[in-house]
Image (tube, rainbow, N blue to C red; front, top):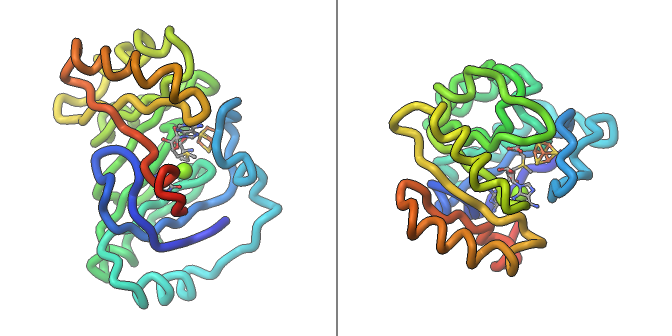
Length: 193
Ligand SMILES: C[S@@+](CC[C@H](N)C(=O)[O-])C[C@H]1O[C@@H](n2cnc3c(N)ncnc32)[C@H](O)[C@@H]1O
Ligand SMILES: Nc1nc2[nH]cc(C(=O)O)c2c(=O)[nH]1
Ligand code: SF4
Ligand SMILES: [Mg+2]
């Protein structure tokens, strides 16, 4: 759908320079999704992998985030190995609803109520990032936290349009449950992609 060099705004790698590759197509359908225009893969142009790699390598990026849409719908073996061969670390942002084909260095798992994740998401996850959109999402987040591997980092991220309502609750929750950290979509505050 689009590709751009920016700052990772969310989660563990927040603040780090990152080249984003956003693949179009998603079958999850979150009501609050902030990139609904990514859902229809057919409405975006196909980009050749070698051309994309040239654009990435032309920057100083040492980190590439593959997102979407739902990037795990695609076989990412080729893009991941090309990035690795060029010394670029890879990360994926995924709802974990499809098994991942491709070797990534960082797996950010953001489960959704709208479609159940596959079991491999729980052991592959380096980071569990749960969007808080309803008071019941705190206990829902805990249901996933007990299933992820022991070294997985845990984040709660307010749904962007409900930040004013949920931020105080997330702050109080993280203070009571310090295994969780707060993740904000800092790129939106900075008005960068
Ligand atoms: C747009 S999604 C694309 C990757 C993948 N489909 C997923 O959901 O993880 C990227 C990240 O943005 C989060 N996100 C999407 N819409 C959001 C919103 N309105 N507020 C906060 N986070 C949101 C998702 O949960 C996910 O962690
Ligand atoms: N700067 C920036 N950071 C991000 N982290 C995750 C994003 C995503 O949409 O997957 C995202 C995004 O769209 N922009
Ligand atoms: S899974 Fe990700 S891209 Fe798909 S609708 Fe949900 S937030 Fe949007
Ligand atoms: Mg985003």
